Picture 1: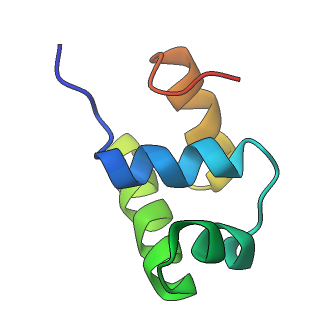
Picture 2: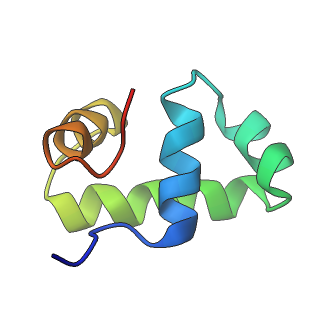
Length: 67
C-alpha cells in the first residue's frame, strides 16, 4: 500500500505530535514556517479534514504516524 504522506509531510507530522509548533518544526527541518504550514495544509486537504488535530487522528488511524 502506498503511503499517503510524502517523506517531508511525515517529518512535519512526526514533530507536530511531539508538540512542536510551526516555528520549531521549521527550525528543526531547516525550512520556512510558510513551507511547514503548506505541508500541513496539503495533508489536511488530502485527508479531507478541517484541522491539524483531525489530520493527526486520521493519520494515526491509517498507521501513517505513530505516537
